[in-house]
Length: 123
Image (cartoon, rainbow, N blue to C red):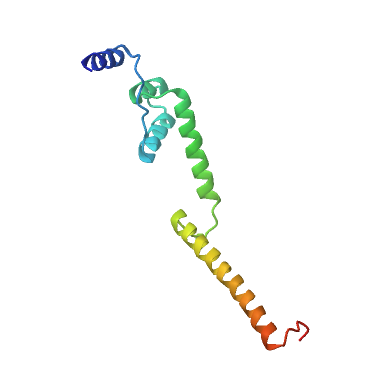
């Protein structure tokens, strides 16, 4: 078991191990975007410092642009409310149950009408 740990640590030291994926917060992405846009420092320096590639920066810039366009295209006034997925699924199940019960009651009503009318459906 200690041999495995030694190999893993050597692989990481030599750069051959699997890299951990970095996840930036929205705030950090926006800070990187702003710093790159200002142009005070070379973009290459920002990329090296943050440990990201130019494609990552391009993706961040695209996300900022899409977010800005989405926000700016929103009309003033009341905002449409979104329902959490769990609440949506609960409401969907409740509706399906009510539809099932309603269908059963419709069948019961048809049977009762038939009994009361003496077997005639014409009335």
